[in-house]
Length: 92
Image 1 (cartoon, one colour):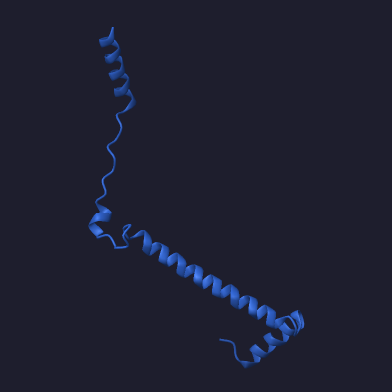
Image 2: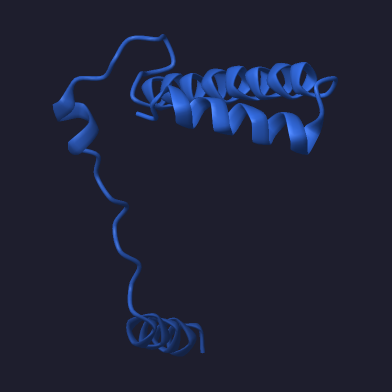
């Protein structure tokens, strides 16, 4: 943490760079930016919590989340071609 002499030096440099009239505007703008950033990070945390809940707003049990079944795998192309060949032979 900077001491009092460092803070005075920083304040003097800021006044020289931006002028006394622009400093309140800069402070106001940076405060608004921090408020927006803080609200957005809270929004992201609430979005993560919503994805862990079901459509009715109740959290899903851990077993329901981890036991979702994958769709059955499709037949390999070689098997599909041989089945197509058999059906063509049967049609003739």
